[in-house]
Image (cartoon, rainbow, N blue to C red):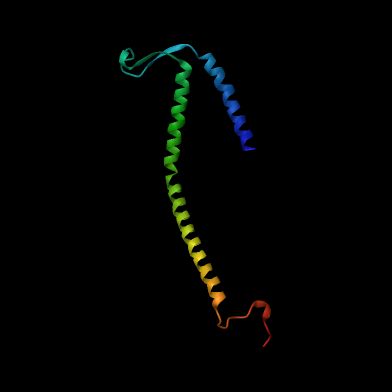
Length: 121
């Protein structure tokens, strides 16, 4: 089901991006100097406009992903701490389980009766 939804979303994106790239295939010059746009050292001549659009979308996705990853660091740290604590408790429970099974096999002392063997006094 998730594969179907993923493919449906990708199809919708493709339906938007393909006509966008076909409509914007003329070349433009990209000036990276805002104070002197005619500076040839910081100008990229004859680049298709859809490349600029897709590159800016890609950069936005990367910057947004890095921002959300950095913001969720607190939760990842808490999950690591809880995972370590759970592993410690599981190891302790396994050790106690081993001790009780070892103690029952070699024990000759009297113990409490099982709940089913109760007698009225």
